[in-house]
Length: 447
Ligand code: GLN
Image (tube, rainbow, N blue to C red; front, side, top):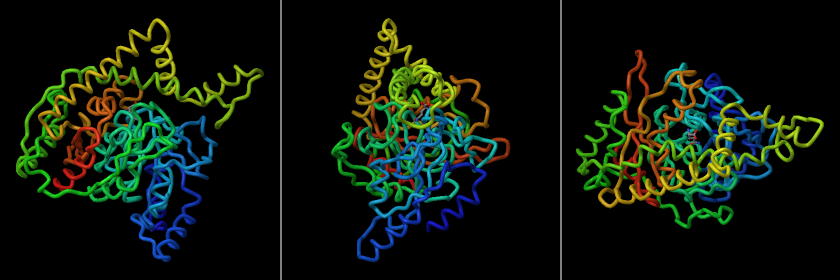
C-alpha cells in the first residue's frame, strides 16, 4: 500500500500536492506489519495517509509552506498524527498549504501552488489544498488538514471530497503549528462517510497536552437513509443569493434529496452572519500576530544574520515571511494596539458572541443547518492573488462556524460546468457543538 501511494505521488507530481515525502514511512509500515502479525487489531493497519505540513511528525520537515521554516525538522509528533501511527497508519508525506494556513487557494506556499486535478489552471482551494488534492487525486484514501476559517471545508468542496471541521476541542491541537489558536482545529479529508468515521474514531478524543481539549469520546459511524427521516434541516437565509447557478442548483438538489428521505427542510435567518468575515479577520490576525512572534530566527528555522540582535530578527522576518503573512502580522498588531483594541478587537469579540448566540437559537428549531460551502467552484490561479479582500471573501460561508466553535462538514454535492469543464461543488452542514457524529451519519444517509 505504501509503495502504491508513493508511485501515485510520483505520477501526480505536477499537482504539487506534497511538500515532502516522509523518510520514515517504510519503518512505520514495517512496524505496523509486525504489530498485525503479533495479533494486534489495528483500525488503520498499513493505511497510507498524508498530513498537512503544519502538523509535526518527528524526523520530518515541517515548513508550514514558509521560507522561514525551510530547514526545520520536527523534534516531536502531534497528538493527531501519533494517533494515526498508533492505529497502524503510515504517513506517506506532508501536504502543501498556504503559508502558515493563511489563504483560500494554496497559492502562497514557498513550495509553489498546488493545482486542482479537475482543471490544472484552477486552484484547489485552501489553505489545506495539498491535503484535499492528495485525496481527490487518489494519492491516499484519507488525509488531515487544519481549519481555522474554512481551510478543510472549502478545499474539500473545490476538489470534490468530504472535509470535516470538528467541534473546537474534539481533536487535539498539540503539535499543530498555531495560526489563530481560538479557531484552529485539525480535520479529516475522505472520499466516503465511512472513511471519515474511521478516521475520526482514531484522531478525536481527550488529550491532556491540549488545555482546550474536550473529554468527548468519538462514536462515529456512517449513517443510512434512516438517519435522515424526520431530521430538521434549516437553510441559512444569509447564504442564499450571491452564489453561482451551479452552486444554487447543487444546494437545491441536496435539499430535494433530504426531503425525499423524509427530512423536514425550513429556512432560518442569522442576521449577524453579515459581519462574520470582518469579525473573523479581526480575531484571526491579532492571534496570528501573537503566535508568529516566535519565528524570529533565534530558535526555529532560518536566520538572516545582521550585525545586531534586533537587526537579525527584523531581517529574518522580512526575508522569511511572505507578503500575506507580513500583512496579517501588521494588521493584527495594529488591531491589538492601545487605542485601537476597543474599536477593533473587542468589538469583533462582541460580534463573535452574537453569532454564537444566533446559532444556538437556530438549533432550537433545527438539528442541522445548511449552506453552500463556497459561493463559487474552483477559481483560476492568479485570479484573486492581487486582491486580498476578494480572497478573504471566499470564506463567507465557513468562518462563522469557527467563531462559534461548531462542527461542520462539506459534502460533495454535484458539479458546475465552467468553460466546458466539470468542477465539483460542495454543500456545508453545521451541527450543534459536540454533535459532529450527526454530520457523518447524515453524510452516510445521503450517499
Ligand atoms: N482563508 C482563511 C484565512 O486565510 C481560513 C484559513 C484557514 O482556515 N486556515 O484565514
